[in-house]
Length: 454
Image 1: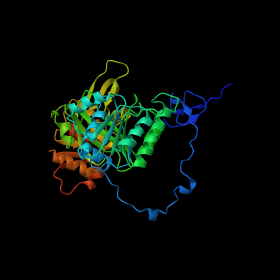
Image 2: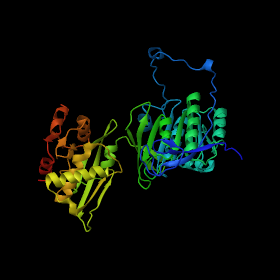
Image 3: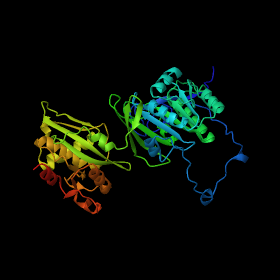
Image 4: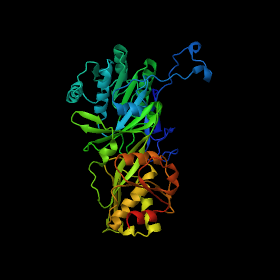
């Protein structure tokens, strides 16, 4: 009887928990159907002799040398990463199919190629001819971009050794594989081991590396969660493939701040960075529309003005419909409950639809008051003053709570020509001294409704 070369265990894609037998629910994170079979690889011997192993260093002796960064020339990308791309960094970019991940990285490769740097672009899912056709459509002709149609990790690393590029792009991490692992490309073992090899290569050669990753139906990057832990930065590319707006969101960054958002517009010649997103989001706004209201929100360090739209209609079903686009549906349910309990709106018999114009997604509670007033505007069939912006978090008692960075929000509103602002009472101390806006402070949501929809 032969002896199996590899043992099998099951790993959770969500939390990384491993065990010998498969179960329907992960015992650690309680996710269903998240355990996937993978091979247990034999432990590798440490290639570094003990005499050459690194020794502990005192913290003051290490020093704090500033990071050297490579400017790409694409302002939004440099800003999101933290001021430029760090040599030796490993960055993961995820997004839905067709959203523009390959287009963005081709433009990034072109920006570095024009600086005289060598770029190796590994096209695992397309042929070199297909990628070349896309590059020509984008007007990219620099000879410093080298295309490689390969999916075997060992072969890719060999070409990296021969070419010595300054930038490496892997399109995508789910298609490459290692020959020594007896499982298909995209499996838990393959994705983890391949990413580990690219990480070692990036750190060892001081090679800036970008990995493109597929996403699941839930919007998360496919593969084990350890994939996001291995890389230095994680960027999510958001937006509807049929629309023109694209949002590049930072969710992890070891070399800069997180929660930053870059805005792009998809055109025939590729992605164009949008320097003033607020104007873009408001350019198609119709003033005086019932159920429409402007919210100054903060994405990272940048204030953005977005339009929230609400539609409330009489429901023809026992269970009314609640739909939201760009907003957390649980937050919408909370605001509807506050309107029913604290203000007396009979919304349990109505269908409610709420949407953010432009395709942006908002996660901060500062948008609460704006969403609530947009719903109230549609319910009462009265338009809100089009030159007014609204800021505030709504509590369960119907109170309006203060939010951070009031001054920067109001400054952005003033620059775009707004005249009035509705803010929480306790945020009045955050007002800039040179503001020309007419500010009205409120404490309760019924006060806000009475003020704007009297």
